[in-house]
Amino acid sequence: MQNEKQKGCHGNMFPDSLHLKDNIPNVGKVFTVWMKKPEGSVLPVHSDRSIEINNDQWEACQLCVQFESCYKLSIAKLALESAVASQ
Image 1: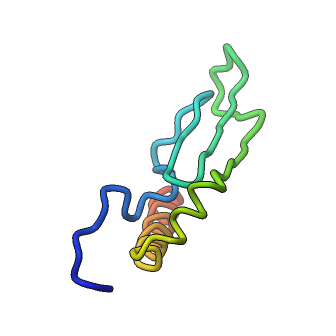
Image 2: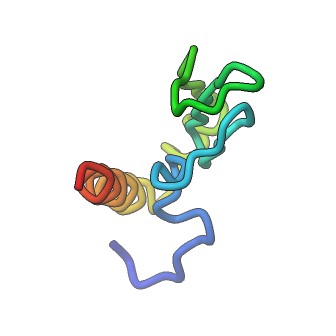
């Protein structure tokens, strides 16, 4: 990668998977996660989980000169969050 300043969105394609909120969009630069929980439920059960992709943002990200580095960092963060969450 060239020696240029990283953008503020660098490495943030995915939302923070360690702190997903219920019934609101958990937004990353490209991907959004929904964790829908029945209203009034006190159990940690989600009736629906879904992922949305912002295709326009994905296209814009791919055109960015920092895309490869950003994508690698985003995936690395996601892998580490998954490892932490499984402990």
